[in-house]
Image 1 (cartoon, one colour):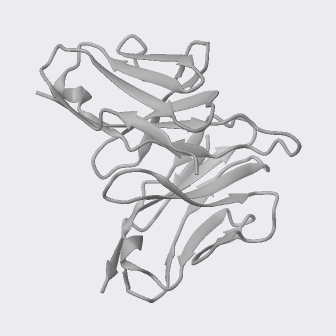
Image 2 (tube, rainbow over the protein chains, first blue to last red):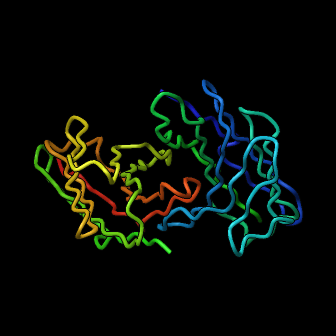
Length: 121
Length: 115
């Protein structure tokens, strides 16, 4: 099955530092990648959608200058949390989706990474 | 906007028994996809089952099956012969066919399997 690798799995850092999280599709080309945030005991909230080679589309309320997303290739997207503060502490999950294939052009499923637990001290 | 509601924060089932997790959604669209995802303690989201709204037949995947009631906007998940490994958070999700980048998740149901 399709595999999405997310790295690192856990990060602990000081307030004010920037943290980069990588999301890779290992065995398929992902034209679209998604970044979610999950608070404890809550559901996933979509932060942004990125398409390879273009700017990410951010959901309402998500600061694009705070959460920088780069989707430079068909297998890699990165999320950089800039000048992180304790309120940015959360579980971040990426997912990737391959483009629809002919002849049915059926929508491809999203495959999720293992997530990154970010703790800002 | 589409919303997904899971009214059961927690459910419990005896091993080998059957359990049904509820999900309702609100939409004005006629074409869409519905999903059930499992999130075990390892935290990776795993697709359990998927249903296309245009299909009348309920999707099944081994011990997992759904009861899709389009008119009622209901999409419940039935787990038969429950196993200890089924213990996890289960999320119901909706995705529009017209905006396939927008997946909405329910709040989740934590399933406990008792030996």
